[in-house]
Length: 638
Image (cartoon, rainbow, N blue to C red; front, side):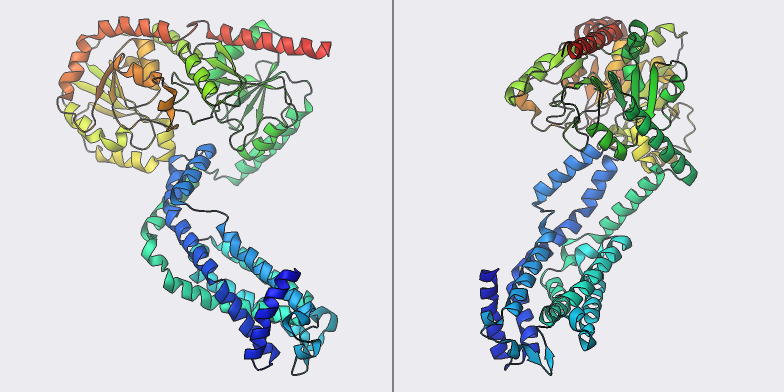
């Protein structure tokens, strides 16, 4: 502080000389000098703020594309920051600099000799600038009032002129301004009058500085405000659509969450916990849970982030199955405080973002169950499975992928248990039990994925132009996630064909039944996981539209192993270029002629790629039972 005070003392001494020994004028001149000295920092901050607002449409689009997937949003946001060389901490730099200068001038006021002055020189028109308003009162109480007023004027000006602050919500704008005014009032009351005067002058000069910065770096030249407004409107619509509109329901869910959170931690010695992100994920655990309930005395503690999950009905039917609703925010603390022998999930990226391994117990075995036939290195982010202890693998193909990644990144080896894919088994049982009469009508199911660039958004009109009126009964079944995120897009698609009267085109937006999937003679998709479920269950061919693939790990090729979802595309069907769909009807007819070949080939591929088909529940469940028993024995021995 002495060094800082000495440097600023020289600046103040110059200001005092230029102001003809007028202390008040010297303060104003000193403030102006500091603003000029910090102007390069102001320019840098202005550029950073403009860059942030310029990126805002892209940030909104990331939230739209990955709505509900907080981990993906966080990763994509950081990737954008890195690409644009944006520093989220840059906005704090001016505040830090201002505080440093404030502390420096406080040192100069306390020690006027640093500026070659005496306390006598600090007087102006009978007012001593060394005095503190709250200690002296009287006219000095004007300082905190003026400090608060200057902060109010600066806040109002920044809300209109500062490119970053102008785009904040009203709550953000006026919340920040209220804090600034409050700080200024306190500061003006409890520091010497000289420091309070500097603060008032600094606030006033900052208004003019912002006007200058807007001239030097005009936000209008860099920011697409129309795109920003459009993206903000679309995001607001989606958030409104996805929110719980009924306040009574919100209160009901909050009460349920509070009860279930307390009930979960009231149970001591929990052995086995499952976590599901939302309703519908139980189908991936079903075979394993059924085996455990039938072949052990273990109690299943099933945590879900969906208050309407089907499992709450199930817990009424089995006393050893207990369901708990914990929302996404509360889930963060639940994960940190987790106390169980084993936790089973289908959620990747454990310990990568806000859902961490337990801080309470370091010996929990975290088990990952796959919910598709995809490989581990292309459709999952790098490191998505690094913090799991055990993987219940769909098939042998997973093992070399995981071992190679462990080798590349010097990771401890995981337990790799060949489990299988229980969902596919149940689909096969349903398909075999379904009555299938002969039909002269050829049925095509179009069931794409939901990511950007999917076939609904890129080539659906071209596909339908080549197939409608040619003897096909066509059902378009969007991905449930597409309906959730892009309802407006789907509405526009259906509106386009509303007047079509051919009687051979149907849109299916009710996902409660798999009938259309099983009854289709051919499935058409892009990169949806339904392709292999359909091929391995029905034995029928798949048409893949080669839209851009879902690549969440841009370095997946370094592993040197082809992803199974790429390898199998040419083995269970054919691939078509979305930009060249001429003759598509003839290509589909040719596929129908080769259905027997695909039937035999799909069964062979299923045996090769899917482990323990028909027995996955036993394979996964018996592993869990045995592992937990060993942990219990180890505790007793200890």
